[in-house]
Length: 472
Image 1 (tube, rainbow, N blue to C red):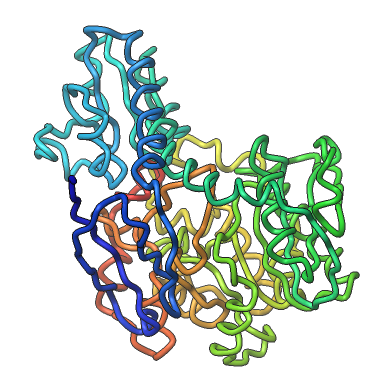
Image 2 (cartoon, rainbow, N blue to C red; image 1 turned 180 degrees about the vertical axis):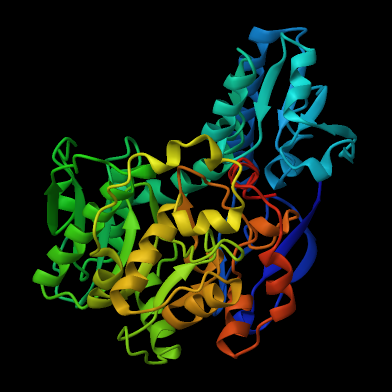
């Protein structure tokens, strides 16, 4: 019988207080029915009989779909774009011969990564018939950059690579479709699910939440242009809003209106605490509401601005981009969340279209709020009287004061838009996220001021920032 070497990552109960998890290595047969699925606060044992078949069904379609796509471009040069974790983890598995790998970071040009030469974007002009394979979560931005260079075919590798993660999401959620939904909401902790209806996923997410949390009020906040047929029995309140006349940069105004209206509906229902998620993202941690309340109590340092600090994940809580807390999932008191989300809509339609926008230093851009997270934080700070000084240290103090940063694995996030969430630490350090451990150090008053000052003058342009893979 063939045997395999398995690595299992263990996060002990004290994970939040230590910088790295430990690893166990053991040998077993894939026919064995024992595996370890680790969650902070203890180990959970899950039966994975038939694991081989499930892994194969996840991987084979992704490889086959890529081969079918590339069959259109036989004997044409293939360039990878992006040198981050997405590329490093999957470059060998896709099994195609690449000419070179493109990256916007000039410090990497001329170097070798995984046996391939790293070149500047303009290098693809040497092959007018080149095909670009984008290994990055910033596909739209890179696609625009490629279009400016020429009419090159572009393949979003995430569509093929993410098949494994989305297959795992479906395997977890699918059994809940067969369960009967019986709602009797009476708890004072609820869930707001906000956003447009995501075909094939929102119903699955709502069914899962409805079954797992029968006592907790669930509010769906979406748009009057969306079809909600069949979704009403899965939730306790549907809030249908009219879309704002101006969606805002990266749809920030739509996000503000949708979340605010959902929170206000929850407040009117008497709900005191809310887990805010999205129609394309939920946590798969089956005990998430109780766990959030426990963490909120454990970090119950009072502030004059909020009743409790707001819980957020590591993903996209940016370490070196000022005032950029993750906004796609939050847990907190309804009043505190409304303090963050009940803010004026963005009316700026022009400043982001100027030619100098891309060349400005990243630190200057944090003032202009090209990212929705920065805009939300700016308006929140104005509301509560927090004077932003636009230094890294003040940004870190902002995270410490108003938020609790928890590991992505603690939430067990399922996000169909970007299934492979960026890790806190990256090889391109200025794309790092605030890790749970780093936040714990901040909370203890430990701050690396030298590191902060070193970064303040780092000459990173906004264009380089947003076209570099977040998992670099």
